[in-house]
Amino acid sequence: MSFFRTCGVPGGTAEWSGSSSDVSQDVVSDWHNGSMQVYGSVTRRYLTVFNKFDNGCGKLDRKELIRAVNYLKVFPSRSQVYSMLRCGRECSGRDSEDWITLGEFCVFAAEFEEYYQQQSCLNVETPVTADPRYNHTGPTLHSQTASMPPFKVFLGGSCNPTTWRKDIAIPHLNKVNLSYYNPQVENWTHELIAIEDEAKMIAELLLFVIDNSTRSVASLVEASYLSGGRRSLVLVMKGLPTHVDNEKISDNELKDLRHSHAFLCDLVERQCCPIFEDLPVALRCAAKVLTRGVHMSQLTLGDGAQPVKHADFKVGDKLRNIKETFREFDSTNSGKISLSNAFLAIRAVTGKDLTFPAYDQIVASCQDSGVKTHLDFNEFCCLVTEYKYYEPPTDKGPFSRLTSSIYRWLSTFKKPSTPKEIVEIKTEVFLGGTCLHTSWREDIAIPILQQHNLTYFNPLVSDWNMGNIPLEAKAKETSLYLLFVISATSRGIASMIEVAHYIGQGRKVVLCIENMVHGVCVYDEKLSERAVRDYNRARCYLADLAIRQGVPFFNDIHKAMEALVGKLLVEHQVNNAQ
Image (tube, rainbow, N blue to C red; front, side):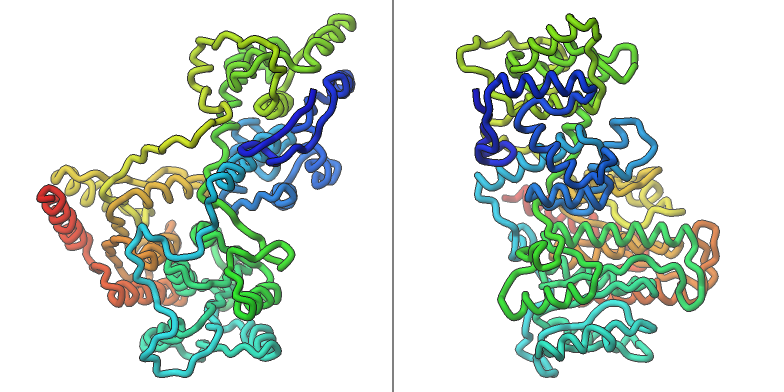
């Protein structure tokens, strides 16, 4: 008997073939050694990759997990990596979310490879042009009315007191004969926004470095807007600042900055563009993009880039489903299920015949030795992965479909035949913006929307984590209007990054911005004058951006709601008339 993988399953081609006796001997041997992890060609392949990167410790940390899936030609976003680690922690019940086991790796890797193969069979390519769903109004390349000479690279990002431009970027660009525009000045003023905007429109490539010595809030907002406009953006993230002007960054502010960096990275990676940590590598990739006509999404590991593909794919649901099945059969909550129950659960999950090559040998061997056969969750995950792609002999009769609620619930885990149409629940308004110490959603926005029978999505949760990013992204994608309120009592970094990106996409946005006042407290901490200036500068940039792009902009939430409701009612009238 042979094992093969075709379109829609890991590998795409015949990876391994062997007789059932070979498989049986290997599996029985592993069982007696207390390592029930390999059940055939699929799990053998994943174990080989796992062992290549686990450094002998039997688990993959964040860095090695990325290397391992990259080895399988899978290129997840940072958000997807976080989802895998968090999901593994939730399903295993362990304290740490910084690593995953072999069983979890098998499920995740198979899930990704199956999706990649499906997209390949459907000829779904990486997006490299403006999204036709949105009315793109982002910056135009090579303005015909430009008052400054053309150049190749705009050197955006962190400014004073950073010196990365003159120390690293400019010498490199001079060496490879690429012209540039340097916006760094000693004293920045509001009037420079228009000049910098013209320079960004002229540039063929935008290099943005977010340094770890400044807050760089305005630069984060700029980079997000330009990414939304599908500009050729090379983004370098150097980490989070610990001090700014000898002022220590508090833990609460650091949390906000980390949150905002995660949002920006996710938005950029959803464009299938890599994010860099090393400036020289980023400069080499920028030169390749400009001199060879390569799109950012086409950069490879060989270029020093960390590619991203299919960043919109939601990973983790199948591991959670497997865990729920495992719990159903682990009635004593011991963390193990019997072999007979394991195969019953496998049958429910995969809809496959139980004629597995090593099954009879394992049962007979355990009966002879008096060993009771049980599987833990990690081993069960390996078995599920193997059985999902195992093709039983054709001469075996079909089994009866289980009627349990588990089988009906998990029937979607079976290998799909043809892609099914996804039904999306759409709302009219996404209530975006700051959440801390604000009640504008409950007190003002929601009552007004309910009064006019308008639907909305409220992203406010008590305990936010990066796992919320994909859900919120989907809600924003399916909402007709995006309302963003940047309050005066919150730093609002992530919210400003988000709304700038959607303005760049040309989405329908209504924006309300309140400036911070000196002496304001956030998380019961009084912000310094430097901090208030930094956050208001970003607000100033965002407000100017909204005005230039024709986005309804207000300083009062009541006026913003009045404009939003008016626009929606007009659209309803137009739709009804049609």
